[in-house]
Image (tube, rainbow, N blue to C red; front, side, top):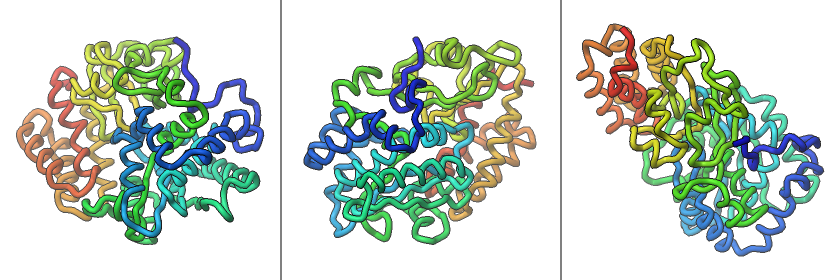
Length: 404
């Protein structure tokens, strides 16, 4: 089937992505008018009914999170769009902000109305200068059209702190507050005590764009695509040994093998033209064999059978000539370098994992690697330390993928 385009604009959209013409062309005027005509509880009910889950990796039900923020005690609430996209192999949010920045911002405004927030921040990766420029232009358009300030919700853009860990939601909050980008101990959760101790809603760019699409139409229309478990579409960043790398939008439930091989999508395996494995979910993702790929669809339950998750939407393809031990060393070094060092299990654990891998531990010290990985998953403060060993464990569980 051809690529579905809901979050990404159709190729027939010729107007400037941040222009008033694009705002109308994409139906964002309709989304805003509909949202403001609805009671906040009605918006949250629609978001719940749509089945939208967080697209940043956690896949937490969006409507449930919004309801928690709205019910939290506090005289001030915030909304934060997390565009600090630093996961290896992930570039979907960059593509979305460059091609349709107004959609994500409309999602921010709808979220602010639904949870009664008075201020919003867009926290964008420091290296995304082009996308940041588009976002600024789109924000200017919304101000010009009267949808942002001075009487409504104000939106401020903040540039990221230049570290992978700054994308973790509580480290991001610290960065906005002018502090070192280190994760906070949870609980309390940001929904109750976020920015400056106030209830805060943090959502990924793609999640907010889904909300804008939903409000521009309705729940029934939104659920026309997707699986029985997860409605809607998903942005996937294809990279590696694939003929047509890029960002593609496909419905949940779409076969992974088709995602790689369809002529309108990946176009087939490049390199040796023989598939070795994929890494799904980014650096903290899971290696899958060709048989597992052929047996899976793009949905959480299907991938969970193999201990995998869609995660950030990154899908890295490796042909059968790639030594995945080399890939694993690169991943281990990445996590060791990017650990903020705040907690011992992550600071020491990521370094020790790298040392063991570099000295042949994949074949001679597997029990030590598993024990160390479990300690990191159990005791690390945030998701970096907790998920850093996931790719390693997935490869240890698939010895046929380890060469040599």
